[in-house]
Length: 159
Image (cartoon, rainbow, N blue to C red; front, side, top):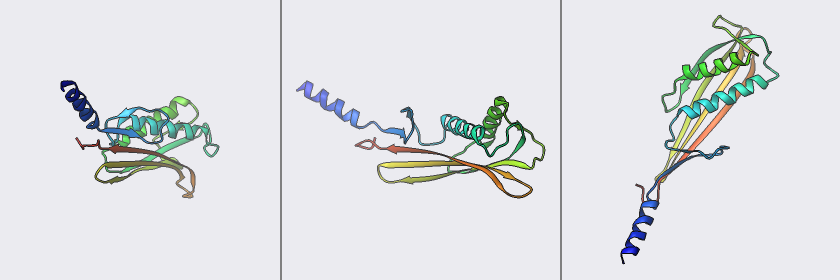
């Protein structure tokens, strides 16, 4: 009888655990929140820098500037830190020059989110869009969107 109670208790406790996981990600890291975190910032910065450096639309050796990156998301996101991560990686690559002077070509961006929930699931979708625009002609030279989606599913008993 005691063994049956212990087994029942273990099954009950295991079924009560909640889990948050990334959707469509190469690594299967378990995370603890659907909110914005340092890993998300690093992932977005890495993908953006990789795309900038491999783009044929962006002239290597030219000087570019950074305008504002807006945070239109549900979370507090330090856009200055994200901008600095991107700028630092671009400067370290030695393929682009970054200047604070008023350049004719500037990077601008925006972070948005879509949040959905029902009784058992919370779904957070982050979208970061960065655009390189010629300020004289208003022409968009380059654009990239990076998406992160996180899903939280409650356990069987919702504890």
